[in-house]
Image (cartoon, rainbow, N blue to C red; front, side, top):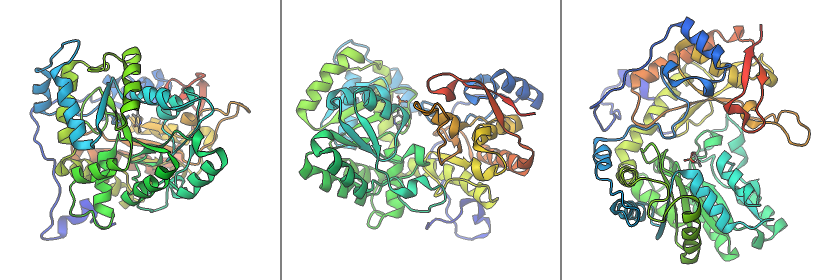
Length: 471
Ligand SMILES: *Cc1c(COP(=O)(O)O)cnc(C)c1O
């Protein structure tokens, strides 16, 4: 990678650091707890960070979803909510922002990303269809399956290897796609489900060349390309940094070009768009739009609010514009990278290259003495909380669930603990504290004994499973 390690540049003259393109106007005190309080809180939560009360958490890195800080302009927008049932002024602001920055013709607002996934899956998928995608996302795949499709992962092999330094580990492997379509027939493939910066692979981007080739391959076969644009702004930064010919282009220009190779997108605005709730669906095809407008009134709300209040749409319209600014994206991803580089310097195993929204600790290499059935990533999340009150999330054997046929655990290759960074919320000093706490857990790694699962919910068990420490 071309960039210098950000934290070791102190000795060099003439260095230029990124800095947050904002200053702080309002603060929210953090909870500071003692080790004894954390032990009690974690035992109460069954050693599952999802079951902790947020009041007992110091730095909350559970997710970047809906946890961003809004700007003063967004808060001012909240006061301009036009809460008319139909035709709210704020809807037209939102529509104009999506058209301007994403380039799609028709907009359908939804309450959040999964609302949009539900509508598009219902509109385009027929039972027996096949949907290829660049690795799955939990809610995306579930809605595709509920609509009757079978999901197929067609991401490049490098995405499954935490140590591969491929610059675009989110890319679609066109040979895999070609094999699938040859097998099932193009008429059984309503669309390719393409995600920008692939979350489950560690926040890894898709290249412009890849989406361009994908488009060229799909178009003559009558297969649509639909984009999960949730973290597409962060993807645009990686294109700017890593792809030939894009260094001089703005994030907004890159985003617009990328979207131009797709037929539409769904969006969880709780991520890139700097709001606490919201989402949308946008397409170019008039007929598909008509179908989506029929569905939105059944499941979300009228086609000019889709589950959002007028004030939410105003904050979102402003957030879209703030989200695509180069200095914002550079500092957002820069902060993630700052944390990752500190950990790399201390030889703490993480997924590489460092992604756009989170650091993924590789629990297999962190705790090589723990068998996967002792839940190493869950153990690491628990140890980190005990050490400092920092909350992270398991993305490994617990999240993967059980095989419906054999009843045994699914044992995914990636056994990860995710430190997800909310946008515009924490400072570089918080990142130092996080890195030092991870280091303390790493130094004490030999003492970790793992966990035993004592309560296991039937569906999406990671949310509510309970554990006990192995004595
Ligand atoms: C969060 C997310 C979704 C779902 O969006 P919600 O707003 O949580 O319903 C879909 N795709 C990706 C990649 C996401 O990260």
